[in-house]
Image (cartoon, rainbow, N blue to C red; front, side, top):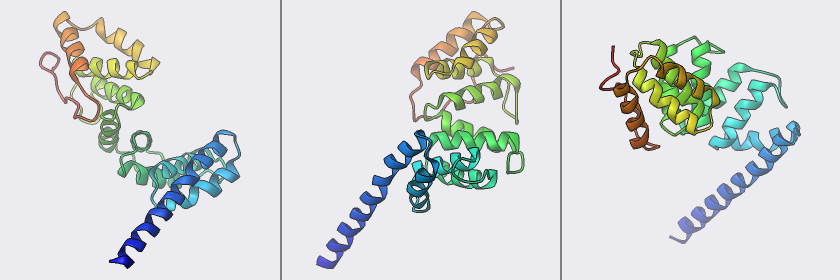
Length: 202
């Protein structure tokens, strides 16, 4: 029993040490000291730290501290996305949508945008709204869901969503706008987003 306790304490100690390097890595990255950021972040990413995986993915995507490598960027973002990191889920969705370093797959893009959007990610909510507006990748055209998503995205600081919402509102009935507003008010972060509305389906 004592050996088990020691093993658990050692594991917790190592985990604590591993997490301690991330703030330093993020600070170094923000200070544009990319070599130091890489030194701090890469071991954490390899150890499974989602924040570090996302940051390492960004470094590969932007070519900061490492040679630009979109395949590596996708690999690290996917690892973070699979652990639930919303920013990484959005990037994975965008890379699938454009076919950047992976075969273009808009259905996969929708899946990852939805996962991030359901965590309250404004950029993903905006992107998913566009899918509903323009019926991309088999997503049904539904102005009410698009409006709702842009409402949420605007509340999360996405300025593009404000213009999109205003434009689509001019083509909607009062009943549709009221449903979209009600859906926005009642939806909670971390819950499923509706896939269709009562008044907006074509």
